Length: 454
Image (cartoon, rainbow, N blue to C red; front, top):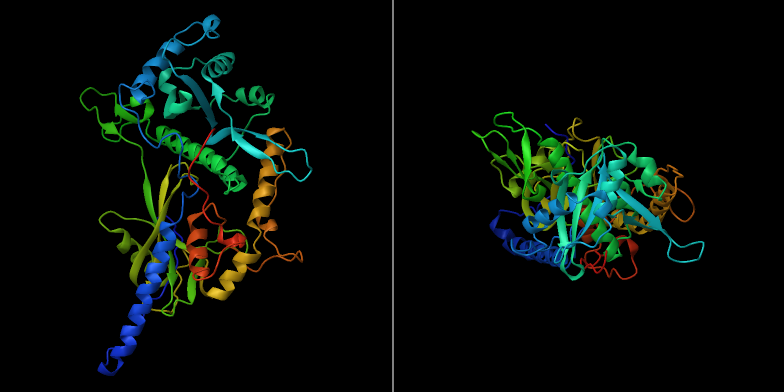
């Protein structure tokens, strides 16, 4: 079984005696009001990190020059041009092509500081390069760029641009070549933490990078047909693959692995169950989560995972929101985190030590305080500075947990995943229920999903 992290919660207990009808009705109404409040807050959330991709909101029709099929035909024409003619303008009605290279799951990135003050925070950018430059860089490494090595990501109609991704993991000589231009291949998870979640443009670039990594990792995993074992070939500009065996021709589509993630709440709606995995950094707690198994609903998966990992029985399950999660292991290219509030029917915890290191009930007051003192913004700025150093050729490592402290300099007793994770929003939505969030950094309202320019 794949290791999962799950959270406990407790549903309302009601007396079955006839003398307790009023108490039963009162608690039922309170519970429904709670559900309504949590659901309303989740509806008001904008895009999570890795959602809100600005270049793939709508797929153009096949006859559109920016559609995958039309762009792919134009791409082949461009790649057939001789190197001496690549500086010439593209053919009429041909869109501009931009390529994002990846190496071992890491997108190419750059960094810049817009202001002149010492305390200005660097901002990372995706390392888009033109198609002729990409062809030239690979040519210097003795590699011919072919249309089948490029994967269609999307387009921007207003700029007449089509975006592609390419995996250059086998070309180590590209690293110094691009490094001379202050580009660097950076872990997607590092870019995630370095992203200012209030910056819609930065969040859009993160979503593009996540989508591209998921597609490229899926391509690496699906090189052979699972039915007959023959090689697969890209189709539809890399958006699907097909078996090369004429007697098979099995179609293969990108893989998405659904995961339920839940905040379990007790019957008084005053405590939440948080868990720790052994791989977590010290003092970090989070929601429980687990993969959905064949033949079960999302609600059934929430109940099963909670019981398996913490021994808690769950009753009612309420949907909150969902988030793409392309920063897992390469064997699981893109998980879809589906978030819920789960209400426990029991309270006694029985932790499965093979799944969790620990699980405990935490009061709303304790959780709210931990959210208020954890300096998520400081961690974001620190990581942004690290990315800037990497792009400039000076890499410095730093433990992210060292940045979660209080003003006295002491380490905070507990903290949760930052605003880039759905777990943070499940926890903060519950903890701040009924409390004004203006000016409270820990509530971390989701940034707008509307993206302007790349």
